[in-house]
Image (cartoon, rainbow, N blue to C red; front, side, top):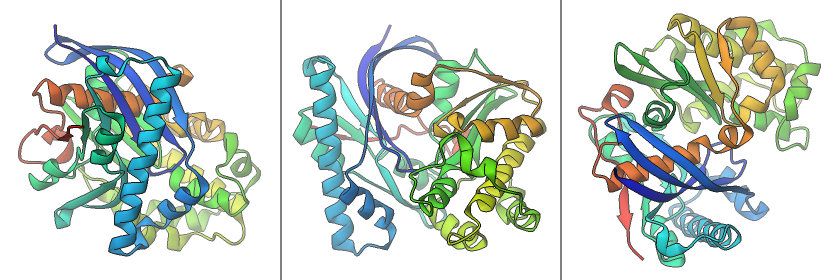
Length: 356
């Protein structure tokens, strides 16, 4: 059996921290891998770095290049601290698999950009680093997203019919007649966190602000009427779409609780409709949004199937864990981007190697 020890690194669009896992991945059969998490940890971004990342898409070329290096440097320090505190032997680690921080994602124009320079990580940790998992898929006419569904199927396929991650965006993966389908459903933590920051909070803990608000039915209709929801998959969302279509509908200077209540309802409706449409009986929900108790309550209003409960480690670290699997698949010379999910002309082995 092929077995790999990988450090998985995930920095999501919601910018709520850097998730790191160290796990062993063992291939059991063609589409079945087992895993064992040895250590996991989340590192918070320094305020000065976080401020730059919020403005990353508006930076000049030289400013973005500087941020790319600085973020890679920060990732490296997180990994080195993680290794030291978890008493990991660097010699046993086969690779670091780093998602990076998405700044631009425009597959229709042939590009996607993640910063957090993996060459910097390789040099400063002394470990082979695999980054840039999306570009090759985009070059083969795919969306370059989502990448997590292959992990859902290979690691958790026997546990649920569908898998929903509620991160910066909410996305879903499921198997239909033996073919994996997946796509972004709707915005999630990104607009909720942006609204919460108007109240000097990083996020709306447990959905308490939203719970205190009242629904704006006019706004709810506008959100649910966005063209994206009439498109069929494969499809994906990016921050540019948010800035152009979603954020202009919201108010960030007043009625924050009402706006949050309405956005939560919108998310619950969109997720519920997708699950019902695809006749999913059991779904596993992970990502930061899984801890938003008000959102999950509202989702149960629109989805009557079973929501599989998972432990907090899996809620928090599933994406970092799966990026570790993408690294293992890369090292095992197996495709880790599925064309049935991304719309590419073929399955590809995504990821670029950087040696120390």
